[in-house]
Image 1 (cartoon, rainbow, N blue to C red):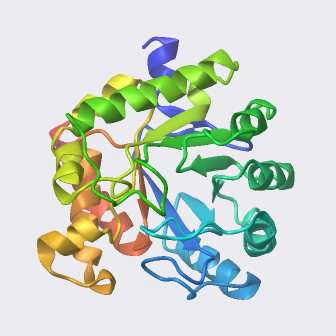
Image 2 (cartoon, rainbow, N blue to C red):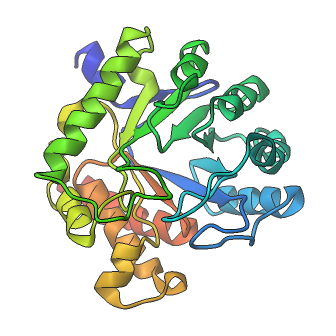
Length: 285
């Protein structure tokens, strides 16, 4: 196996070189009062850290902490407010022994999180805000996830249109990876996310899943987040709190099609489903 092929099975982060030879589960920790799924349930240091501990106990391989909702129509949160939500929980989460990601668009929050020891920056804006790329390139080893989003959270669901959604997402992610390459950020530090639900219709999201193998051409590990998304509600008729089964089905389909990390709310159930899947795949192999 070549070095390049080996690197695709790992994700280099601040403290960890994550083995991606087996699918990884990223547990979602929303530290906001207005997230679409569980807004307010884990706000504050005590509740947020308790949720982190719960998800690790359920088998999460890594955690993703977010202090600003990026649901459709969500307003932007100020830097100081986002820092107040994230930093106290981050301090405790870093002691749990798993990689910690911070979900943020703001370079000020990126720099503060990385200075505190965060392993990964997960940016729905793919480091396009002024100063964001500088914040990542200044760090010697942090991981980063680049996500595709049409517009902004405030505007992204206002009639999204594509000639070919898969081709356009691939082209966007390739361009953003090239921007990181030009700044000397090693490929093994970078994962990509097609942004399910971020400026896409139900059919756009389904196309991204049906043709997910085409996203592998970007040449970076795929991180996929289907958990509790509105497309699953449109397909099943279920409200957001009753979409666990649909979320797990979508996560398994994503893994079967090459995703290396699945970002989920329902960690224990997803871990169980992947355990069964891995055993079946081991027998087939």
